[in-house]
Structure formats: C-alpha cells, structure tokens
Length: 302
Image 1: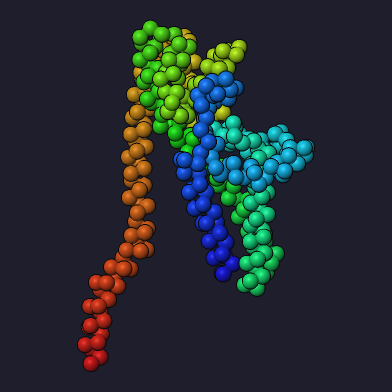
Image 2: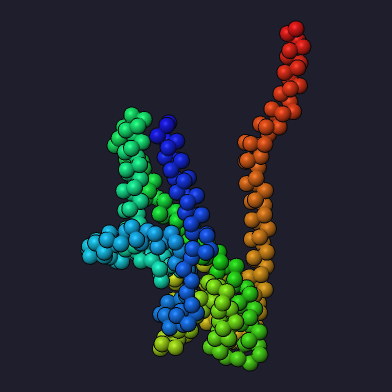
C-alpha cells in the first residue's frame, strides 16, 4: 500500500506542476500576428513553458526517434497521436516525434523514482518500476488530452459569436470570402481558436485550394459537432441563401450553449456533494454532535 501511496503522490505532483507551469501567462512565448500571417498553419496556441522545457530535455531523443522507421506517421499509435496534436492546435509547436520523446523521458524519470522508492521501502523493484513507468506513459497522454479537450471547448464556445459576425457581414452584402477576411481581421488579436481555423481555410484558398476542400479539411482535423454543423451549413450556402442558414445556425448554437451551461451547473452541484460529505460533515459531527454525545456518555457512567 505504501508504494501505491507514493505513486499517487508523484502523479498528483506532476499534474500540479503541469497546471502551474502551463497556465502561467507571463511564461508563454508570444507570436506576432505578422509572423502568423505568412505561416502555412493556423496561429493557434502559444508555445508554453511546459513544451519548451521538455524539448530542451528530449531534443537528442527526438532526433533519434525521427530516424527510426517504426515511429513514422503511418503507424497506428503515431497517427493517432498526430491527429490529437492537430486537433489540439499544437502542430506549430509539437510533432509526434516530440511527444513520443516526451513520453520516453517521463518513463525514464518515473522508472528511476520507482526504483528509488522500492529500495527505500523494501518493495518488489520490478513491480515498482513497471507501475511508475506506466504512470509516466499515461501522464503525457493526460497532458495531450487536456490540451485537446480545452481547444475543442474553446472552438465550441466561440462559434456562435463568430457565426453572428459572419451573418452580419454577409447580410451587409459581402461575399463569403470577404466575410471570412473581415471577421478574421476583427478577431485577429483575441487568439480565438475558431478564427485561427478560418484563417487556415483562407490561406489554403489563397494558395489554390477550393473552398469546399478547405472547409472539409477543417471539419476533419477537429472532432467537434458544432464545427461539423458550421462546415455543412457553409457548404450548403453555395446553393442557397447563406445569410438565412447562418442566422438559424447561430440561434441553434446559442440555445445549445445555454443548455450545456445549465448541464454544467447541475454537474457542479453534484460534484460539490462529495467533498461536503467527506470533509464538512465529519467536522460538523466532531464540533457539534460529539460534545453532546460525550457529555451524555460521561453522565451515564458517573
């Protein structure tokens, strides 16, 4: 049981350090909009201190991995990781080679921690190393999935406002291409993930892609039902009135966002129930009920 306690403690320590580092705004590398305008990929996420630190540690491992044939993109695991990186908006800052090297570094560090702890508490060294190595493997996946979930939530939250802006510009008489350009210029300083996706669509169209293909690729690279709905509505606008479609789509998305907010509020009340029962009620019992019970017991005994 002691080794399990150390394992849980080390995992919790990693998660705390990650959240402290990755959400500290002054330590993030800022990118200028002019540099992003000539890039072939969207100016999505900032290169966090977390990624930069791991890149410094794992740079030689990344180079070795990139030369090995069994880590190429066509493999099942590497293609899955590459898809998650793309859907997290991290493809400018991270490759699947980087991520796999991150995992290897974490596995080595946790294996060493498991070995040291096993020797201190006199536990089975092999089981300890395996358990800590597996924890190191999963922790990097946790980091990637947290980035993925946050990026997709940000897209989902920003779509209704952007669709409203597109509706207004199209209703004012602008073409679809001009509407995207105008809206992107309006939101270009807000680091809006959906705007970043639209910027990528615009660049692909300017580079010779058809608008249909660029919109379809945007839908494929993001696992987001609201984005699928927008792409479908935008492509349908080639045959029908796009302003009416955008208006109805915006109204529906705002209603769904309200429903999601109410659902999250209900989940929050249920989540608070566990710490109340586990932490507050025992303290209430000790402070209020225990003295009364103690006085009754003492009175009966004496």
